[in-house]
Length: 397
Image 1 (cartoon, one colour):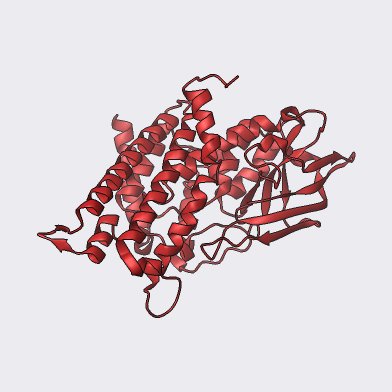
Image 2 (tube, rainbow, N blue to C red):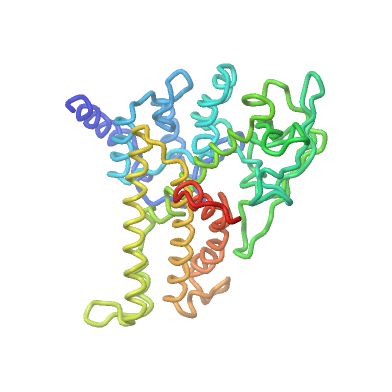
């Protein structure tokens, strides 16, 4: 215990000395650091903060030092997380490489692949995107048809992906492809390749919110070096399932933003627009629903904290991530709908002088939240996982 408390004191002192003041404020979308070849730092402090954390290996604190990580024990990683939250420190790097790809590379990649890809992920030098869903393979992902042919000294890829988040900004993609059309799950492989490769094309998809991180991605005779296939050909489904667990865990770990120190609470907003009587929200029905929502959010974040600590302690949270992902989607959709309802006409703005930026953002956030029940695995698929793998229910015959 003395050692961990010493680590806590040293970590607290280091964070106080090295985390810039502006990095202790609520994060804003335009200042989020995704890394990669095209990274531009809107706030110079973001660059300073990233460089300092990379030097410590603390963008991926529990990864081994030989791959650029911090080499922290599970207990130390928990302490670091607690101390960063204590000062409201921003995450120095947002990264699909850290959240999803890196953990499966540590588990499935060979040593050469780990040394090649992991350090650049930690340092934010490579921005990754995920090539999973296809026009005919969404909920039934194992039906994917993107073709990967063995051409002797390279793989040749033809096909397309859809809902590829930030594909138009990514440097590299981790992609599920079919190397064997005679088998379903056993014919899938997991490959990595550069998005600047000849034959790769991305087209952004516009959502009803007015913007979107999603793209259609097309592959036409894309050549991929043989050494960029992870694991064994035809065994990519095992990697895919494992990665989906990390994806759902990380999507839901923030409750789609419910844990962000992002200014006024739902109750604050409702009081402002609905008004108060004797210091409490005037509309009793809305007050009850807002209270229920905020209690739900608090319980959700405590559950996330428990699951995070269990995972760092070595417990396999596995299918439980599907419960959290489903709950997070419902929670964020309800929250954004309540906010728009509380704002009345001012919550229906799209543009124009009659609406403040925050009011317009509320409208768009409510519309954007509709996609929460699709991304990272649909709510229906997650409920099936819960039924079969958590509750142990039998398939309907």
